[in-house]
Length: 499
Image: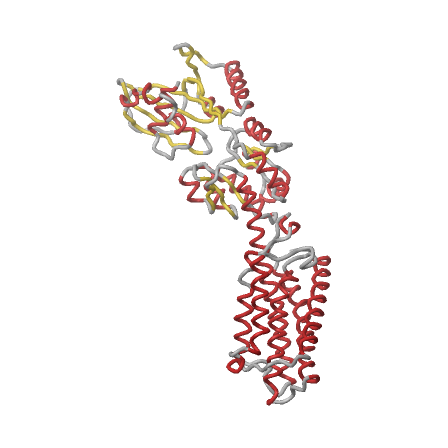
């Protein structure tokens, strides 16, 4: 039995899967089976996922020996006899029933079972084909225990808590699949087999894929088709696999995940290769990804709404004032300082409720946010314009520097502080605080903005010192802006959801 399994795995030229590796590395096997050196490979009938078996033909002792290895039912279907105690006996339905029962018992214990059969032929041909896989003699089967990782149960539970559905797509039969699912805590109500899947249209499969959690006895193409069906239902799909038959699914998925012990083709097809042995790294990756996404959305919302508001402010001021509301060098300085204040956003904390479930890229939501919050900043920009024009009498070209300095300071401080409003759905500074780097950069930029009108660089930048009376007005404008922005943000989240 082991000799034939060894000869088949040793001489096959295709990619060796983990079962072949297990046979070849079986303890002491190479020492016991040096007979392999006495056989010469003649031909090979490669594996495919329709037959679910493969054969090699070797020559030795004046005979050709065809050795077939594969899924139990598929190999059984090619056998007419079995070898028992060195004798060949004819198989009848009762024998097959007993063999299937033993196989099922092994599967129920979590073992994968591979059947081995052979036949001898005269060395009259050097070419063999699928039709030669007939009238075989069943030798028996070999069982492999491939238990799930210890961290699988915990990882699956953690993913469920974070809104990630876990579905099983496997080439194993339904019995061993059900056993493994039970071991990792997955409740299985229904298993959809590959043979059933072929009878479904794409629309019907998409409907089934929405509810069925386990798919068994799938070919590589069928795994990829299930993923495409989930795409039709609007799902973002990650697929994790480590075998030869996982390549198409890894490519089709939005994110293909493999492990460093996987076969080469799986690793080459994957987008991410896990180096840690624990599957809990999947949960960590999901959480980190959501944090990154959340911080990206913060920046885009803040930048889009702020720039949209500035556009309205500049348009209105240009139509009203006899001078530019801000000089070009002041605009550049404002943008430089403002951009520097945002460099710490990637370090920022993300609220637990935001990362509790998956979030989608929603450009419509961002557009609504920009259109709503942008004009709010313009309201307070116009309040600053009115303050500088009517209160501080900066109405002519001669006084333009005072006007520009006032708006520069208000614009820089409001843009720098607004990220602390936009970054959270909670009450800022009280229920949710920014990361230390973001707090420090905000304080630094605000301090620089307050210092510049009095600094040695003031003249070069076109600034003039602001009167003492300006500062209480500025505080009122900033407090009003931040308060109204928070109220509108809270209404927006209540109306359109947290995204």
